[in-house]
Length: 213
Picture 1 (tube, helix red, strand yellow):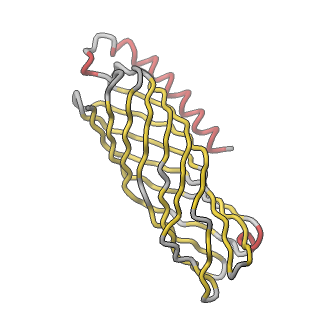
Picture 2 (cartoon, rainbow, N blue to C red):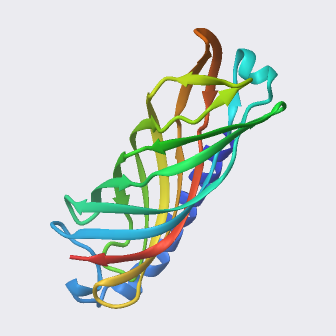
Picture 3 (cartoon, rainbow, N blue to C red):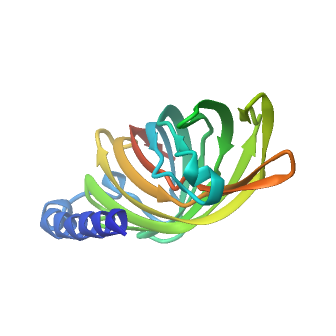
């Protein structure tokens, strides 16, 4: 809940920034902003910071998930001057730890689809907010405990929230900063015995560059 409050506060600041920047951008040409039909492609370096919690045996073991630093690619199509649809692609290898030591790593692939609203579309400073759905695939499971493999549920669906801002550098190139909250989870078992549910729910902070097409 605290993370959602922070994102909401950031969105409010973004709207204020957009209103402040609007007069300066009014004299701009169509090349100085984004408009219906534009494609935006961004490449970011992201820090995935899990807000892990667990239930049952996993909670007793003090199960936690480490941070991961990975690249991320996303594509946004502007349906109108202000409304965009973004698909986010990226994958990470996350290490899981507990009170009894390292449990191993698991691959996480969470493609996320977001509906966005872009403020100040004609300006050079363009905040945006987004909300949508992520589908998470867990793969290459290397988790183990006591010499035995830990089985996990391979699929998860969950909501996602986003706040970001684009800073235009040239007519087509811009710098991007972005923060997302993604909800994801998996059930685990050992030798057929349920261990509980592990909620990963990461905060994802990214910085990168983009191009308008």
